[in-house]
Length: 350
Image 1 (cartoon, rainbow, N blue to C red):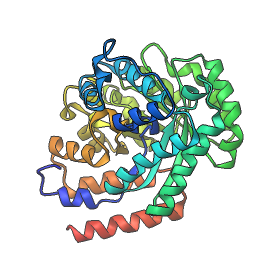
Image 2: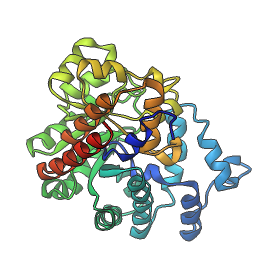
Image 3: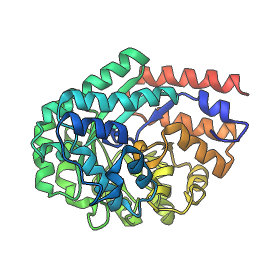
Image 4: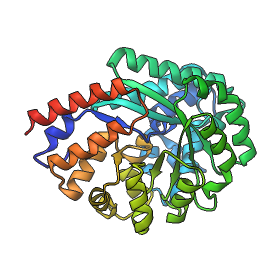
């Protein structure tokens, strides 16, 4: 909770989340539960004291030194996911908290390569996550979309195989689009050019992580070479005024993850993020939770952190919320319904 007088407004806002990794909602409690259920050996507490208990692991999460430090624990957590039931429970854990925070539309990432590479079939992963999505839609009236991400630290050839495996689901709309995540430094986006070109030719929506730990040049490369519809993280965008103006003109949305950026030491504080510059330049952006079980906050926590850092006005939040709705990958009728709800909330707090 933030101390701002706008906190009730922030709570009431109908929120769209566009940058959240389902595997990143794996809480330490669920991680230990799944490890026991599936007979998965976690690192011993002698090798890594963080695995002495769920509480010790949660405390370790507060001290990540980099993206790669986080990913080390992230992939250990993934190893506990084995059955469709596991993936459904994981998704449900996220959707319950998201609903509590006011999320009405969620576009969530998943990393099939992290699972198929250890022998879990793609269909098992997708079936579990889809069941979680349908459960959220039926229980909360939430709309959901799944975005398949490629792991950039793995060979591009493996991403191409994943794309072929998922192509039918992408073309049928079972999956909303493709993304690119994992370690950024040393893996420029252009390596995935051929896959993204094929996706564009098939009219599949495209996003990519760029400009988180990597340089602003990675953002330009993703925009110009991959022809993405959306930029994930993108905090280095403000370092290139021409590129920022182009992104604003083309209405390419940036999916910001404030608490994640601080926890991974991409910035020292939320106040260091280019939120004010994006608002002034007309860059559409949304505020998101990224990997909330690891970074200490879900979407409302991120909204509050932004408010504490920038003291935004009700009008400025309305601009952010409107952009997050309009630039979502859902149907126009759904956007209209969420915009109507937004207008009701704005009027009630004006």
